[in-house]
Length: 218
Image 1 (cartoon, rainbow, N blue to C red):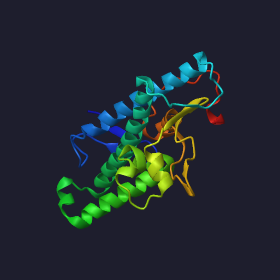
Image 2 (tube, helix red, strand yellow):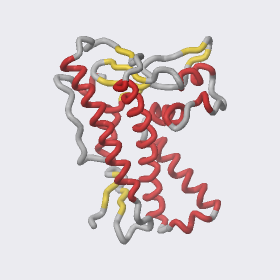
Image 3 (cartoon, rainbow, N blue to C red):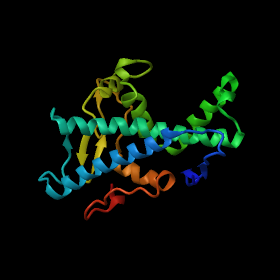
């Protein structure tokens, strides 16, 4: 099998029969899933631009339809998967550079080194808005594990998460407040983030272009 380049900017490579980590099927599974989610959201954005009478307006997804619920789940799945993917890429790079196999992780000091390396990589590579959203919404709702979160964040974690503002669907486009407390969640657009991360992780994967829209304008 050919080497699999996981990070094209930092040259992190999974080499079958050579890398210290083998049978890492999770990397391919996440890659496929993340791409599928981005394509689905981009399809909805294209539809909004070409058929919706609400183009150019902010539209909050407040109804209980299956389509709206699925869109919200796409954001949940994407945030969790893209952070998980980045941690896995970082893990493989760290293990390869140190020539460590999994047995080395039985030692507590090594476990802490791996976690620290993966944490720092995610912080450097993945947009902060997604990391916060993953930690406070998609991994688990902040309200279900309240710890050092203000009332705005606790309410926002279980609030309506998705809105459309041309040309993208966004998470947390609003800035929800609960009394004097403002939520820590930040806005991000799923398909836009996928395109921004693609040169690093998935330069061979494409999603449809937005019709007659300057992608850098939003």
